[in-house]
Image (cartoon, rainbow, N blue to C red):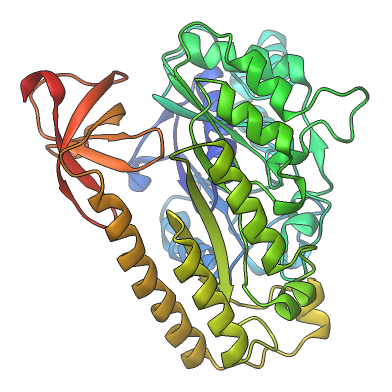
Length: 439
């Protein structure tokens, strides 16, 4: 029996799909990249933006003819479109979907397969399914893994920014057991992973609701002790919980890469207040200054939403000016779209026209292209360590410690290697180089 998983959205969704894939593999299914050859099709969905939800619904509708042609085909829907509380209206709207599952929950798929494959549902088979579910993220020591693997450490979120649907879709914040995280990290590295990316909606809050004082800095230190692990990253941070202790951990632990994702979302204090972010523009600038002072050469990424309710041209220009002055290495840009159930959708008018949102989006996009192009130009003729992750088409792809994308053309097998690369060309989104010993 073959399965196909389509994933939309954040790295947490990617991690959830990987977990489900491992669970399906462990009970004897095989993956296929051809949706037409699959006996089980799974859509892992995102609803953070309306565009993401529209893509998921469009993909779901496109599967109806395939289901009609293959009645035995199983179709499953999971992720934030379902949410932790389920979505009865969606089940009624799409009767050709067989399985509905909350984020990070493979159990409905395994139980449905147990019912479908009754001739294989021996007591031993059911015991195997139970073991897979007990093994929280479905990891096995003998499995091969990607060079860079996502490892969730905080599930859900309790902060409830005005625009964000995540608390209602993924549930309240819950830090995972540190012992399980360390066990899974060792398993991933034993299977070939050389970089781990620790995930959380607010990853800095890891451990804050647990007993004791074991928090993200301590976890980073313990993970750094894994012998064959080369690199550690974490995302996404929140300005309110980016502590000096955490900044110091990045500064002193060699395996923790000097790249921090800490969103500002807007540059205007009134918009930040309405977003319920809990900090001011000045406080964010101070944080960036502290990070740069403590971690020389650090790269900083941010998120920005344009067109939030009440954002005037003056307010937008404060965001523009902040991005221009701080010269951050990455800016993930989005146009505001009201999400059902959020504070802003219920109580604030979506009063910025769509064309104006797009104009502001393009203005920041052009600005950031210039900023990053100038930052990357400094890498020209420099030698930088690159961890290689794969070979799309005819070029090897890897990343620098500051998370810059580097491509190299070579006949060598670079998979999983960390090598010095001499940069020969720079652009705003990537770098091209040569392996140092070939120069």
